[in-house]
Amino acid sequence: MTFTQAAGLVLWYDAEAYLSLDLTWAEPEDEPQRGQQWSAAGGRTVLVLVERDEAGTRQVAVVEVPADAPVTLGVTVEGADARFWYVRDGVRTAVGPALDFSRLSDDHGSRLRFTGALAGIHARDLVDAAFTADFTGFRLTCTPG
Image (cartoon, rainbow, N blue to C red; front, top):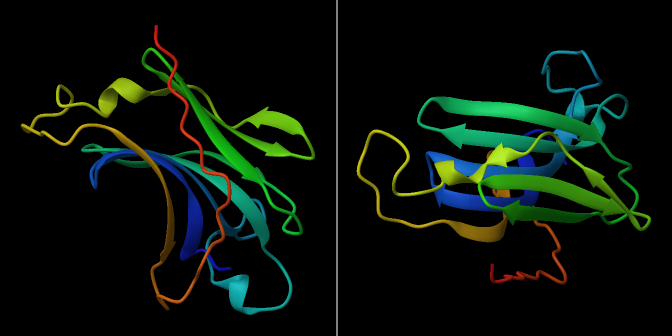
């Protein structure tokens, strides 16, 4: 996996408004991006929490995770708060702060939009278009109230 490849969970309004938690690769902590993924040493597997709106893309949190086992990603939305989390070895861990889910609406932003918020999974490969990700057990639960 390289920094140009990622897979994860997304709350999506459109290409300019989304929240995502992605499993990807990053340079060693506190080092700038230099493409070390092509060497055998260095780098780490991370979860990256990203928030995007018309003001730009912000990396909200980065959490290093072991690369040798599956990880479960999740998000809980209560009111306008979207709280992303992951599970490893049966332990649920929050990733970053609560994010503003209300930004994923027709009422946010300066332009008229009519998409509606979506939840889903995604995989991307910005260079080779060959990266794949295995997803199992995708589940969406809605509780009235």
